[in-house]
Image (cartoon, rainbow, N blue to C red):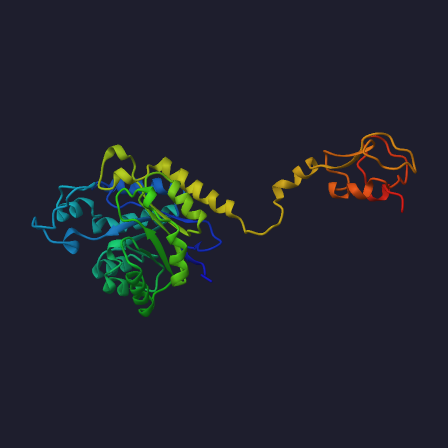
Length: 351
């Protein structure tokens, strides 16, 4: 069975409320003040963590406009890879201030490194956990580097085949990796909800013996709620201060009030799952009295037989249960009974 673990003291795993990660990505729009405001907004909304991305355009690609380097179609169509990553990256010299502000607020802050130098930098900031992006799930050297930190790691599996996921997990564990969460992910921006294939999630956890969750790029919060119903322990969602402000990921990001609703909704969904035991819910106790039971509906003298004319199955539920009616009919009253009396076992004379 998958064992829960913790990031900054917050338990994660089966039996615990879903861990909600607010992904900042490039939605700071190049403004440190906006990045700090996003951390504050994520905290107010109830997210458990805010996540950054740690790279530079030069660590991801080269400044080139040849075939394959210019994006065709989609949200970022027309941009070169270098220009997009230049716009979207979070400057490394911001990281200390962002981590410090998160610590002040009491919200976890960690990042997705995109190369080994980023891991070293994040280690110098005492990052409490790591996220490996879907696009890096095939970068086994990076996965090994992250694993060697021994810290909790969340790995997105968008685009990855079962064999690639298995290879990533094997690499992570062979290099001493700590707790691992696999996130099901559809790497489309936005992702169509009808292609979310959430039933794949539990299989990920079962195949690899770890907690699982969802990196959600669909619009709205319905897909995330459904994921929790299927057992997701982690939900990651992009967040922006306002979609109207623009930004690399704004079009498929939640605004703060929507993030707050998502946090509330996924935790309610988790609570609604319950334990699966057949025990009666505490909330039902007050309703028991409105079930039917056997009542005296006409005055009965001592020794008089019970008949359909003087006993009936009616509400409320203080008398003998309805299943006892065949036994009651034909029996005799042990004492005089007034109309409106709930019939009890000691009201029946011995046979």
